[in-house]
Length: 210
Ligand code: B1M
Image 1 (cartoon, rainbow, N blue to C red):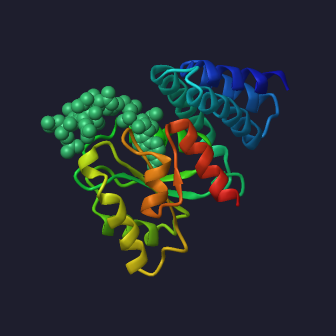
Image 2: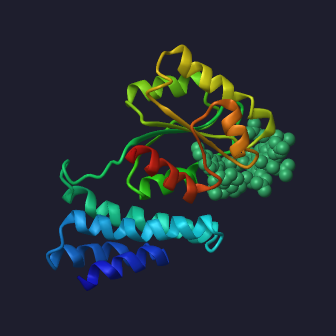
């Protein structure tokens, strides 16, 4: 269907104003809500990949996120529970002592845009709060944003809190942020590292589909 292709392109272009009209047009033309959602997510997948390859920049990614949100608003009442895509549930937060949230929010938008349910528990999050949220929401992944070298030591505390709660094997711990590396991730006993929001979505989807 031509209109679905247009939705994918418009999502990629980040035209939030055009998106509601296009979504309505597709529905009126007989597309299912699920088909429209898939078309939007196809655009978001391209955005995530290109952002990871430094072919797109933050403002462009934000425009696509906003286009996704505007399209989703129209789609939401039309999606049945069966349709509603949730590849998995992610608890997202900036670790204790860390007030930075711009990157975290971008990660959250990208994860949602790729079909994951995101519970954002904010900034300055103590390890125990990650655990409590993971239990409450039966999370698949706990995603910790870490922007300061001084908050990197929170990482082993988060891992230990999950071990102490007896649920370390039930939840994958993903970390990211400017000072974080793959080597640090492995040394701390975390499950996954992502260098940016696009990579975070790809890694999270990979974990949930395993
Ligand atoms: Co802060 N700050 N800051 N700051 N700040 C940095 C991080 C710093 C590098 C600046 C510098 O000195 N050059 C430096 C850290 C140095 C270090 O630790 N080695 C620093 C410092 C020192 C501080 C304070 C200590 C300053 C002070 O008070 N003396 C203080 C600490 C406050 C605290 O957290 N306790 C502080 C405060 C602030 C502001 C409040 C003023 C503001 C934050 C506003 C906010 O977030 N609402 C701020 C800002 C804006 C920055 C810089 C300039 C920009 C950060 C940002 O938003 N980048 C930053 C310098 C810089 O990065 N150039 C700096 C844009 C964002 C999209 O990128 O956050 O890296 P980023 O996120 C990326 C990736 O890292 C990754 O994906 C994102 C998108 O691609 N990512 C993940 C992030 N989380 C992820 C999670 C994942 C996966 C990927 O999976 C779970």
